[in-house]
Image 1 (cartoon, rainbow, N blue to C red):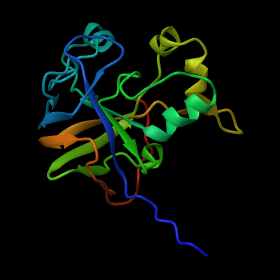
Image 2 (cartoon, one colour; image 1 turned 90 degrees about the horizontal axis):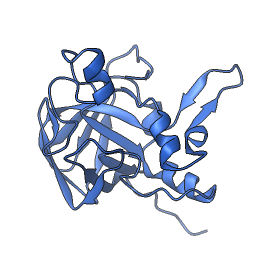
Image 3 (cartoon, rainbow, N blue to C red; image 1 turned 30 degrees about the vertical axis):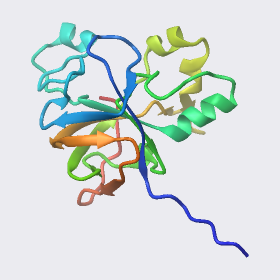
Image 4 (cartoon, rainbow, N blue to C red; image 1 turned 90 degrees about the vertical axis):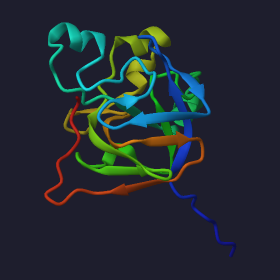
Length: 186
């Protein structure tokens, strides 16, 4: 019987946008700045940068500096007939081989040679996803048997150690001490 090798978790794509647009442009590499996010990205900053959150309270700490989506979601969406590529849903980092949605709050993601992200919570899908492609909002939401909402549109994080992140970089997850807190929308 042939042995199959499971690839280690890695970066599939990186994206950024200097403007407040829904989608971000894929690039070869991004530079993460400690406490701020992706250098040159509209969502970088110590305080909230997402326009709806700025309107509500511009003094809030930015818990959404870097957005990650698992590439497996894009593959599932493609199988359902959607045309979604890395960066299209606004993520900065598209991953492969790591189940981002099951990570507890406070997990540290070591990426490449030195960048470290701290997972802060789930991305709460909004109506902009539906505007991108009809039916997509429903496709990134699900429900448990007891009716609880499952959000599949990725996770949010803050930068605790800066560095360059590029396509193909390895990803290592370090879980926080127990008890583990489940991810909630941020």
